[in-house]
Amino acid sequence: MSEADITKYATMLAKNPNNELARFSLGKTLYDDGKFSQAVESFRICIEGKPDWMVPMILLGRCHVALGDKASARNYFEKARQLAIEQHHDGPLEEVNSLLATL
Image (cartoon, rainbow, N blue to C red; front, side, top):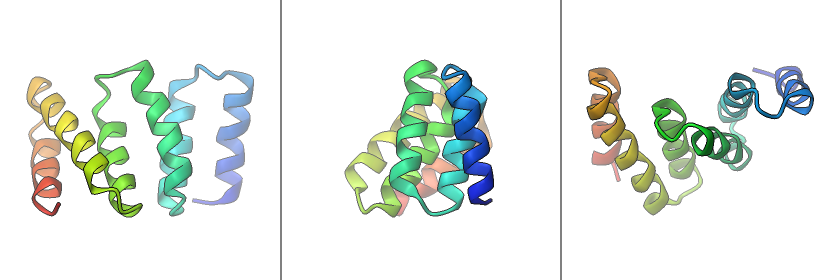
């Protein structure tokens, strides 16, 4: 990912702040670029709008691990774990259980 992608998604959001996919894509691009603090904000907005959106919840946890905030990471991973159970997503459930085991 690149600065061009970040600019693209930020521009999309400037035009339509309610574009959930652009917001998620911006967060994911920032995450992939190692800009974890900035990614946290995008993912936080994603789950404020859709509290049952599991993927940004997992990525929020991963961001907090990278930022050294294990307590926040655990909180997001536990929420993601519950969503994975409720939504019957076995793969993400295994991923989150593995992530929780490392904290």
